[in-house]
Image (cartoon, rainbow, N blue to C red; front, side):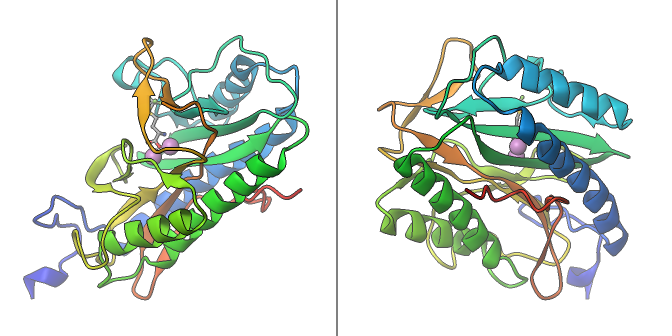
Length: 269
Ligand code: MF3
Ligand code: CO
Ligand code: CO
């Protein structure tokens, strides 16, 4: 039946990749995750986010890969670094990290044409109880979303799993940014919403590649973008956290392409 052909695109515009494509995604995803493993020790009070980005840029180049973000819609950096109430797309620069800051670092690399996109949370120095809880809930929300990935489920099932968990913890899910299909392109259909109703949205099929990257706020979900046209912040200035994995749908669940080789994805305290 036509519907089983791999290498096609669904009517929602979602590419169905072939078995051989999974290995390309594993290589790209592992490199992105490895770079985040290596940046971890540099995240200390007194470091600047620009220094962290310099390390990431050099590490991408040294590996022979390409940064997907440098030159993307005019963006000039090898990472996005989003500190405290910055929700996403924080621009690295001279800002000094101070004790207790929490930050998301998001790296996307291209290896042999395949995109690996991942982000996770880091802490400079000591961590407050409320920040620890936010980070824990955001990580667990991502893993619950990933737990809903299998052929026959829908994208609404993923969003629902995330939203139901986060709201039960009395935190909020950001609506203004979403995950995305990827593969040989950075941002492809579908939009992967981190909220939704069970059974809604396109149906998942083996061979789909996409990110899940929930942003969770301690306060309200509304965001605004600053005058630099990139930096998204919480409107109420509440703390925000995010974790991101790139995944591929398999016959019975999913592969996570961006697993941390050092097993440092989840921060342990
Ligand atoms: N890596 C981000 C994502 O998860 C996209 C960053 S685009 C940039 O989709 F230009 F801001 F870097
Ligand atoms: Co992404
Ligand atoms: Co990303």
